[in-house]
Length: 282
Image 1 (cartoon, rainbow, N blue to C red):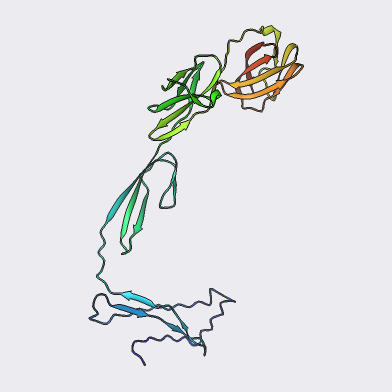
Image 2: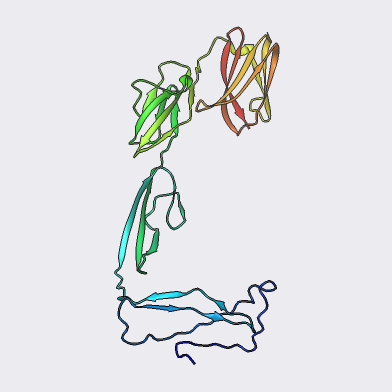
């Protein structure tokens, strides 16, 4: 027999066919051999196998090629992946990082089989786009940033000179927002409305708001019929919550599918009368 050939015989083995039992039809052989002494570097060793079943022609496997080379000496390498972003990132370890961290690590392997450790140093810039409102003055919560106040009623046009953290609207009605820039990131606040709370061209005893506190709905008795009337509901930050319009009505009813709290109810009619009153939603 050829001394360069090793034979394994399984008799009987009775493997099922792959169409009946794919997993059970597989067989494996594991073995080790020593190289012949004196082989020079660069020598290639090729090997393949022939698999026989009964008297059928053999199944020839792919040829495996081994090349002799100097052994690889691996050194310990560590790298830092420094990332700053305005948004969460998907890193090389397949994980999504939505907060700043320096704890994540991942091991990479080069072509020679040596490992390198990569450490993630990730900084997420988060901007607080909330705004505090006091009357006609607005102040951004975010500190140490760049600010540009814009006119929401004019297609977000920049307001000239309004680049401080606080801005006071020079008139008693309007909608403003602020664009906040920090560390290369940018966010825009919601639009906030200035409401004229000093409307006094309608005597309080001319109208009646009931019930107040209210639950599912509130009604307003105007005292007379108007060809057109509006009810506008705002929260205490000046954000417009609900609007409803009426025609040829004396008593107006508005459903209150809103959260519990204190609101401002503005009542205005076709003849220019307007009044603002507080409404409590239970």
